[in-house]
Length: 257
Image 1: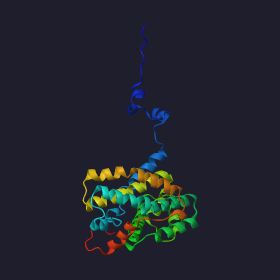
Image 2: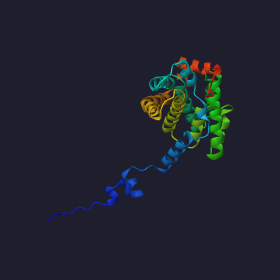
Image 3: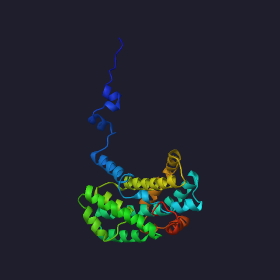
Image 4: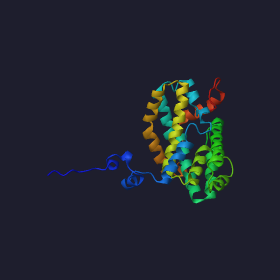
């Protein structure tokens, strides 16, 4: 006599499983994880109104000078900015600000905010990071306020640049540092690629190829930034720094930096 094994439809098809079944299977996000993901996707989306679309971080001058002329050269330029320039430094500032805000260390947070505000090579880069930081804080206060956010903002005592703003808001919302830092660097690189795509110009597929190719650099820079101390800060992307300086006097400009 042949035995017939009856398999539950919900067990056979994960899409039809109940919430309890999915949780038992270990593939469901917790409420806190879902909230963190939702907020990071919102805050670091191109539609979040911090004005990132109007800045190129010197890429506009690099295109005019011929340093960036196609997808390959854009990828090389951005890899250097990310791993050896402002990308790594911003990652360190975000990580340090997040940790200080998380434990309520006001003195450390003030020092980090002051150093981050001073750690820019040009007037336009200062405008870029401080304007975005100010907008990020203002929108967070208006739409995403939470306990501890006002105290963290007050502890900074002055200008709050973009990575510090993201760090303290993420900490106030109890978003873990690793996903917050990875999301920030992904958004940073995506904005750079968007600027490059409009300037070279590049097609959408080439832009996505550059973003895909930079995935290891984003992940590696995030890991380095989380392990770094403030004493490890430093930049070796001299050409990119010169680009941000020379953009100030560039004759024709689409971007503010």
